[in-house]
Length: 129
Image (cartoon, rainbow, N blue to C red; front, side, top):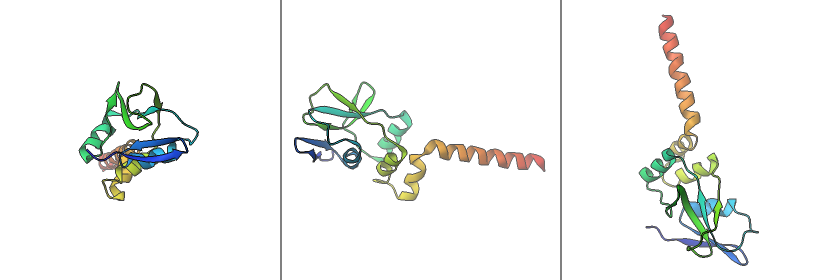
């Protein structure tokens, strides 16, 4: 398992996580957050499978939520839910992949819609012949 790194958030609190999550959490969390808490996010099964396939580590799972970091101590029942945007997924995927492959994975639903529309266009053109 990768080494957990801690980064100071404000004078009395620090975020602990593993790369690439630490950079995302530094940008997402407010410096006003203090105390102890586990930082979790909700993730689709497809994103979770892609992360496992790429070898991107998480800190575990709790009741369906994926643990990506913690504030203060690990043994705590308080949770902070972080919502990951497509730009966050892009930075996670680009940690292990080249950027031209990470971008389509970060917005997979949009890519699948364009591929479906393109395939339907080909079928319509072939049917017209």
